[in-house]
Image 1 (tube, rainbow, N blue to C red):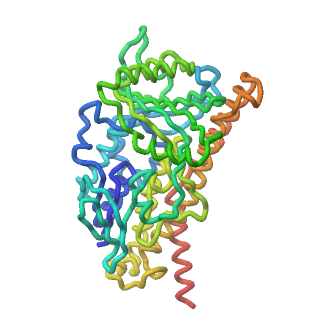
Image 2 (image 1 turned 180 degrees about the vertical axis):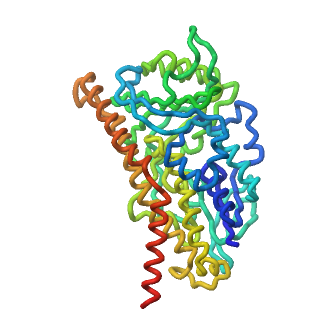
Image 3 (image 1 turned 135 degrees about the vertical axis):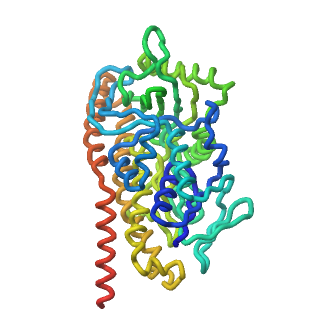
Length: 459
């Protein structure tokens, strides 16, 4: 049985760990946090993240991982369309039909972690990776507390500022800060000024393209709603690389950290006042002001180009560690994470019957191109780099459309044109992204590998 170490117990890490274990691999899951206590989120001040959306392509990936029933059992809100509007809620630029489901991040993570434990994944907390080394027995992983473990394959699922990526891929491009803001969760159903506290539609994007501002609104279940307000950073406009590097470092330390209960009243009032100055609709401002938890947000772009590698020998990257968080701008961040997990699991499972892969654990294959595990990770990398390039390009296009200086024309004209272009862009780009079939792509890539190998054997 091939052994796998997954570094990072977030959504992509737990999904990958579960899928691999379900497919018969020996899996250990390591995280820098105290995973056991992190899974007990009974108090508001320990909730992390906000709402998130799984679209049709992400749902298909969950089905492939065997996790669909587990996830769908979590409280959620079914969505059938999304709206893109002006920041003040007027002038709907597009009303896009969509098949998706909203969840609270924390609820989903609890479900995935419990599923991993039930399936037999070994989970370890308070373990920070510091070193990777190829040995005769596989990959030796060393942690900050001095302990170590060895596996045939290491999967880096430790986020946009991945230590696995930094250690295994020292030449990998650095993450680039593109937007900052806040994310909050509120309780639906409370009445304010005679109206229930909720968004008028289950998914909406309020956009001020001239100023590079946006608010993503979600009703996540019958109990909860979530919002995320972001503003594009000056790095996409005028700032130099030194300033940008400082901001990346600073924002990385505080991203997704929730304000404490003592800070929350002051911060919710402050952020609501900012939302009011942005001209956000009154009910949306109430949702911001009534948040039960608010966390800081920072979105990062990890440059992906066709020459990028997401695998190096027996180390592979999934989720934000591979493609960054810029995909959130086209609501594909979580879908991309689940796709990468499902693709890796499917590649390894399809090749599991290959004698070369079975013998890889016993080191009967020479290192390099003859190593069947390396071949499997190379196939995975080729598939996911193509996909990540497409998704991130779409997200960057949306980011560019989210900021159009008023100097380009009268404010009213610029606003109308930008909303129209943004609506067209979103409708035109999102449809093919949702139609992606990871199974077809994976099966074709693995079949191609088989043909190439057979051709080499004939010669």
